[in-house]
Image (cartoon, rainbow, N blue to C red):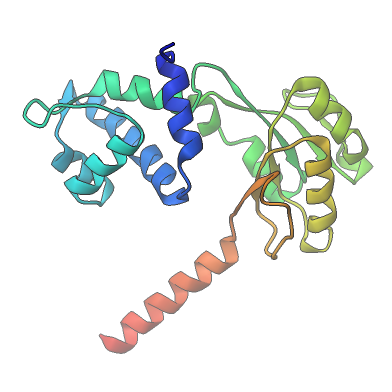
Length: 223
């Protein structure tokens, strides 16, 4: 029996072991949207590669890995490629996300409207501080003690961790126990977790800024 197209492309995504490949796929999708906005209906791999910062050969290799077809002479049909990518990222339905930590970073994420454009919704936030908890507003802020019940009742699989370093490991453990399968971690520390049960993406803002400061300083020294 032949697989349905959306099932086939999703199986391709599950087989991808390199995070960089998935990141590039997201970058290709964003570039394709820009090209479409400029009136393009087809795109060649060299133009797409230049927009993303990779070679045309890398574009073709990535597309082949994810079963995205095109024509060497005629290029890639933008609508068809974006439809396949939407299937890979499951854009046909809203991605529900929970946020743990309603501090400064958490509030900024709650107010970020870019998620809506990608059909991503933070459905609830959680915090250990009762003063921050409220069911009023577009996104309720609930006690951390309610995390497991909420996640399981609403079938949430993705979470954002934006708590201080001292509580990050404990909260991550609770998120995993609740059934969260993917975590974006803003806590600036190394966390332990079972890699066969959860995927963690670390976002260390201080580390990135320190890298930039170092690079700029080295550039100044070398002229």
